[in-house]
Image 1 (spheres, rainbow, N blue to C red):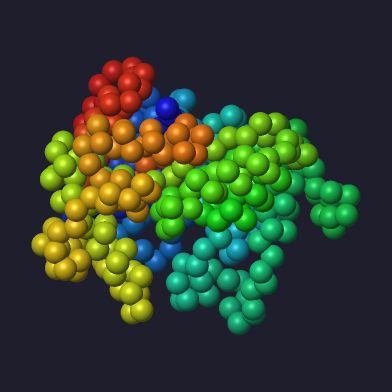
Image 2: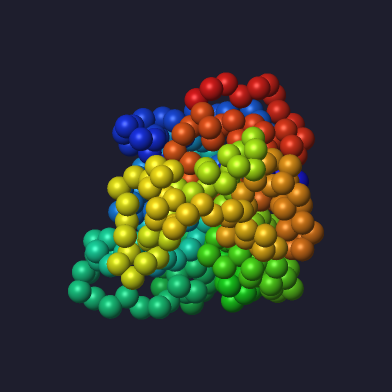
Length: 344
């Protein structure tokens, strides 16, 4: 089993964005020593308690501070951008850190105001051409756009090898099949509709074809992204899960309440209407428990999907607590580590 981290760069209370970025660099160094495989950072906009608006920039600091860990620009929201400009940034990362950069390709709304702010033409309708955007981006990453492309004569660093490695962020079977047909990696999200993950994984493996693109894959690669909250006891884990539960409940209300920081435990309990125990569903929205319980759940999920890598997201705002939990999880799975990870 391989384990990886998806970091939303939550600001610890009383901290600044600059401090949160430096903490993430130290965390990446620590989990590399613990034996984790990847460290991805998400692209979110207009989230007050996160410090991650430009993952393609911050990836340079993370990759420069580590030596083996794969660093992921963990969600390029391609619906907002020019594939050409995105590819220029990613090709630069690939040249600086060959063989160590991943890119997750997705689409999402950042909210009506942020979405408009991201647009170059603020009053123009945005076409639903995501599939074409993805294929264009992959063509740029390997400098092998089709002959029919009007941009066929342009190259990005043609003297450098193809890359970085692209992954499709997928919740649905449709997105997973696109990843398979293009011969790309599958980043299977078990965040929003976790019960769909086994079908999504099956759709990917059933549709996979070796990629015709130089930046693609000859054989399938996939991981499942899950929200995991650990504690040394079950009771501690359930308490630690309450703030993130409250954040997403409030965010999904019709009023779309965006809190300025992660709530305290009592605030979270009030928002949720009481303590919420760990779910017992086969595919819970939050995997909550001791390292042993989490391990048991992830191994069962691996058996159902045939996928042996899980990307962990926790949304805790205490760096020392996060590192303790990653250390406990690494030990539970017997990851190979160089030495005990130091404090953050």
